[in-house]
Length: 72
Image (cartoon, rainbow, N blue to C red):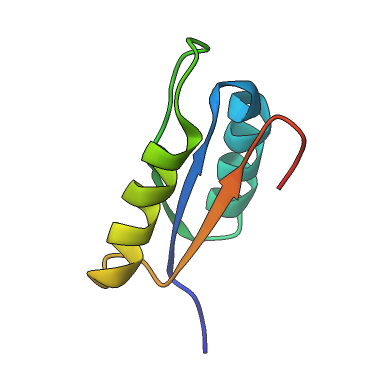
């Protein structure tokens, strides 16, 4: 199966890694749906996990990656 669309999300400490990953995936020709966050204010990681799961369940994306401050 060739993946064409990927959703990514993180907590507030994973933003830099999330941005780098999004850039790499786009350079490889994938559509990337960045679900946030986009600033370093403290957030509840599970809110972004829910958003990512929703996008996968609706078929908007085939895969998802969640990133936290300690890694993937």
